[in-house]
Length: 152
Image (cartoon, one colour):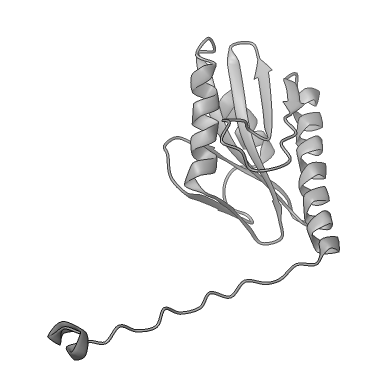
């Protein structure tokens, strides 16, 4: 033991609280996300995009978005969250969107879109312009019509 250790003993790291989910709660969360992705695909198709949901059952290293859509010379790579209060997008999720878009260089207009569906509150969107963590809260970000005007 050194004098430095005696002078300033290290504090025990704070334990992080994590809630334990039942199997039923996990299934409900997955279904809510699946339903949100399907709803977004239908919304995109209604405005003329060719959209598809990419079913990935577990986190993977492949740069696959939850949903991607194509219209004319534009491609959208979309990460979808279905939450109650806020949606948090980690840096690695955003990076996968950019990697997917990099593969599709043939499209001159490429957008990494973050979509959040809030329970009883509707959809909110953001377009990621740089790598990093993002958060969308209720009534923050873009509405559906604002998103369409930005990417059109």
